[in-house]
Image 1: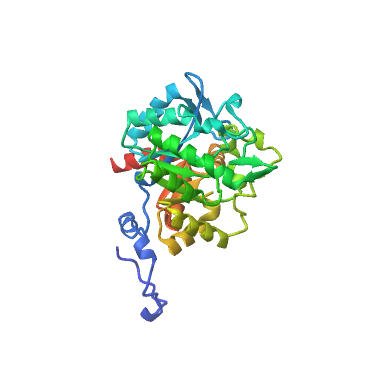
Image 2: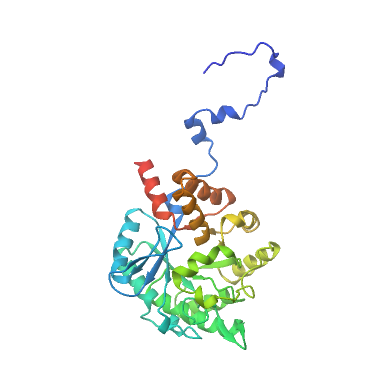
Length: 342
């Protein structure tokens, strides 16, 4: 497209390099786009609960629900229809099943194990990721075993390894330890291998900050009340620290992790970028409940355009270096992407 010349400038005063030329038309913007978002980047977290015919809204996460197992098959079929490659289960355990040592986590017929089997029956090819940590199962809401008022790292490792085997036996594809105990990746890897689960992957929460962004999630799994006036700062990372994050990542890689998770997501884009640059290792960003709820609330208030703000936030993770994204927006994004392709 020929533009009118500006006679007040000589030819040498005009910029020879005009970055806007590549931005002018849509086809050109698409050609030079450095990062792309696809359905294959998405992991969808699903909350499960007890009862029958239950689809229970999570009040602090508009549009997100807890599903009883008899309703779960509908959700699995829907997610499968969108070609989302993997899901992650998080249970809300009934209070009467919660104990100091979280023993329900070792029940081979617990909520998570049943959900794994339902998912695999409906769609054997969709990846199932399960959380290894005790916070949904303990009456104190912590991720580990309390001893003398503190979380005992090594006692916790023993039960985490048993929990991992229970989930692997139920048919999960990926074990995702989120507890932040020292040495848990090596312990779980050795235990899985010793029991013949050499191909079960470990997606480690290598960098999990003691963040204020987890509040809605804790409501969803029913651990927030148990954590009143308590803190997870003795095992989750200090938000002020970054060098420590790379020590954690290096340890988990050396201990046998197949992938790492950085959590939360957007407040820690710098950690995602440095992790990818330093380790060039499969890296997953977790757009956590608090991030979801904030975005959802401003959308509902009409302050942001829904599609633009959701896609922009997810593209930020890709630009930062994330290979995949755990996000509660996964179904919405997948549907939009599929419609664009069609």
